[in-house]
Image (tube, rainbow, N blue to C red; front, side, top):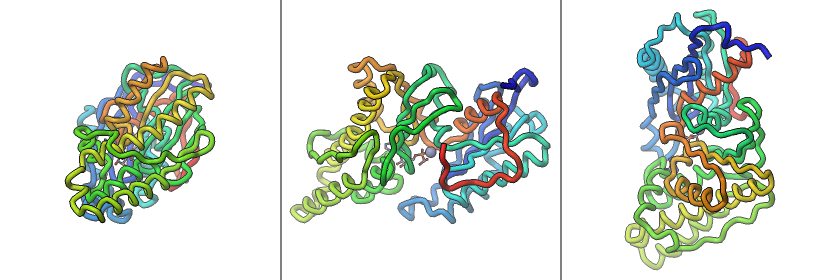
Length: 342
Ligand code: KG4
Ligand code: ZN
């Protein structure tokens, strides 16, 4: 394999992320993140979820200042860049189009190569930004607003999904349940906050039975709904009076579902290097329970820094770094994909 790193003294890549409601740009030099700028779109809060058309418009407004700031923070000029990377998918098509078009025009204007990145693979590779880095092969539980996957990672560019959700993602389960509790979007972090002062054993819910390493969250979401409806019929103030215990019990149930499958995956594969990634990996209940389970089971556990859990361009940049070294570039005919396989 050609090693492109030898050709460059300083290999500078600008990476752009625009798959959902975060416009982000980062600069990486020889594998070190030099800047990571994230503009979060607050407009969606009032609608209780991401509105695709508004997301595309907000990306158009944010992308130039975000890219400028990423270059300035890294003290890198456009002329210093050796490649432009972007999220090709999966995500909202209109949102992806903004980042993809921007990256393509910039690469064309500067006459430098383009690198396409799979957003879900980038979440996994965020573990290679800082130390300690997982050893290969490792398992990564990738948990976000749109995905729930157990990924077997053999090398930076070789990974396989060995289990995934058949319906809702766990982040969606957090957010939709939060809506039932009248919490604003995105509700996941708020459930986490209230759960900190609640009793996780206050209310119990039946765990879904799914074969193999796959997940299902639609049934449990309905259980939460029926439980809340019943309680509110008996006491209209049930939610406000018990918000901490409700959130702690819901969070405990969702984390339990995730960790049971992860345990099964380690048994089946014999792999004991375990990582988590994606927005829901910011959840303190998941971080704590995984750490405890790791100690009990003799796993080596890798938990990303908070800034690299939710969507960011630094993870796109580190994925692009590996692709650059392997000489994996794409051409100007590339289009974004709402759904994208590994
Ligand atoms: O990876 P991400 O930023 O975007 C997607 O690619 O989907 O993940 C966003 C998801 C949302 O569902 C959000 O509620 C959830 O991550 N999330 C959390 C926490 N922080 C973010 N869920 C539970 N607890 C948290 N602390
Ligand atoms: Zn994501």
